[in-house]
Every structure is written in structure tokens, then in C-alpha cells.
Amino acid sequence: MSRVGVLHPGAMGAAVGACLVDAGHEVLWASAGRSSQTAARAEAGGLTDVASVDELAARSEVLLSICPPDAALDVARSLRGYRGVLVDANAIAPATAARIAAATEARYVDGGIIGPPPTEPGTTRLYLSGDEAERVAALFASTRLDARLLPAGGATAASALKMAYAAWTKGSAALLLAVEQAAATLDVAAVLHEEWGLSQPALEQRSHAARAAAVEKGWRWTGEMREIAATMRAAGVPDGFHAAAADVFDGFPRPAREREGRRPRPQTPNG
Image (cartoon, rainbow, N blue to C red; front, side, top):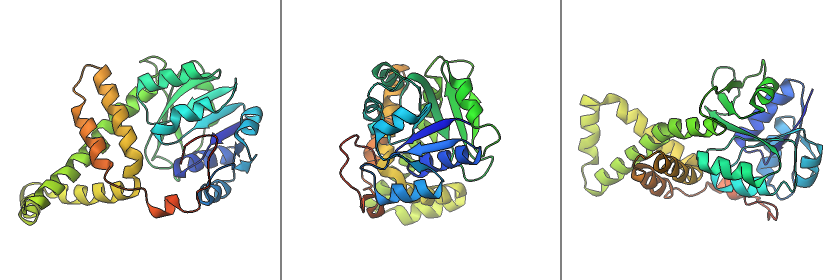
């Protein structure tokens, strides 16, 4: 059994933590400055509250950071000399991952999650890279979360894979949303949907799914699109697609339930 800390568990972090609890590990989190929604998710997942981030760092052999990409660097900096294993499983560019690794005294493992919160087997993969990636993968053996090692691509390969994957899934969703907005402004939306039904029947459903997802999570994806743009730029690929996608998702406000009951956060800006 290992003692694992989860930094500020949202829906994904709480579900990942619950997988570790089911595997027999002791899973900790820190409630200081967190919202009532975060506390409810952590309790439902079987996570143990140790109150402060300092206490979380002091007691955890491994720490998992799963937060909005805009907060990833600040979360890592909040650890104040933590020297255990830090798994950054955020949707960030490889260059951002490298900055986080340099900003912490921890033994850094890069992670990238593809799929929904792991509530059942076969839906979600955690890709891992770095010197201690194998140790982290072993924590999830026989759980609902499929942890996979990346043999190539270097220490930040997991972030690179996540960026490449989300560049299509979320980037194409942003394109559909922009097309819908333009068609509505130009008063051809109804005819466009009729034509989709004739020649592109899958687009109707994809468009509805894109809007529903953006209403729920678009506020988180703005930063992720900027990280993808930075990844593309570093790879010598045009970054304008995903810079524009960030603008599209920026038009979707944070849902009210994500704002309710939120307390001041002196330690990090994470949601």
C-alpha cells in the first residue's frame, strides 16, 4: 500500500483517487480553501482530508496534480520543498511540463489523461513518461484506470500525446461551434442543418455534443487550447487553429454550480 495525495480533486481527480482507494492505497487530499463541491467529491471517492497542502505534501509518497491547465504551475509551486514523486497529469504543453519539472524539487513524472473520469473499466487511459513512470503505473494495476508507459518521446511525452489528441477532439468541437455561430449570424443556420442531414448526418449530433460539452467545461478548455497552440508552435506547425479555439471556448462562462460555495484560496488559484 502507498500513501498518495491528490491536489484539489475535481471530477477527474476525485475519480482517479477513488481508483487508488479501491486498489488499497491510502489517498489524501487537503480541504483548505476548497469548495463544498470539491469536499463532496473527495468524500464520495473515499479520500482522507488532511486539511492543508503542507500536510498533504509531508505525508504523501506520491502527489497527483489534476487541475485546470492555467493553474498547473502555481499548484506545483505551492508544494514548498516536496521531494516525493509529483505526477502532473494536466492538459499542458510539453514546454509547460518542463517548466513545472524545473520549478519543483520533486521527482517529476509527466502524465496525460485521455477519456472521462474513470468510473468503469475501459474508458480512460493515464499515459505516463519520466524516470519513475513505472512506479506510478504500478499504483493503478487492476483498477478502472488504464495506466500506460510511453517508451519514446522523452520526459514530457505524456503531455505531448495529450496535446496532440485534444488538438483534434476539442479543436474540432470549437470549429463546429464557430461554424454554428457564423451560420446563425448570417441567417442560414436552418438550411445548413438541413444540408448536414443530407450530406453530413453525423455533424448534427456532433454539433449538439460540442455545445453541451462547451457549456459544461468550455471554461476549462480555454487554457488547454492555448497550451495546444504553444505545442503546435514549438513543433513548427501553425498555431492559429487552437488560438482561435481558445477564443471560442472563452465565450462559455463557468457554470454557476462551479462558483457556488467557493472559498478564498490563499495557496493556489485552482478550481
